[in-house]
Length: 124
Image (cartoon, rainbow, N blue to C red; front, top):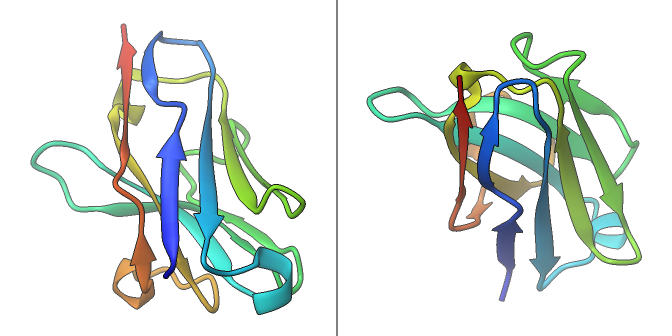
């Protein structure tokens, strides 16, 4: 059974940093060639893609709104993907989800497996 568990969310002041983790089980990132994406959803807003990493070729993708501030990485030994978030802004406040599928699609509906989400709140 595939499971994704996010952690690392919390309350931080604007300009601060957080590191989110997405621990995967039921598959092996580098062996099974899964792509892991991070998405976020703020109250009353559509779910949006934040970043994605492809295990097959190591390519990474970022939304324009987070480029230069967020970094996605993976630790294959721990079967975990991280999202390092620096220079956080109040508009980054949302529930952050990680999701898995076979490639980094921009459309979240193509992602097959989802974690339960972790709340990130950035105060001004």
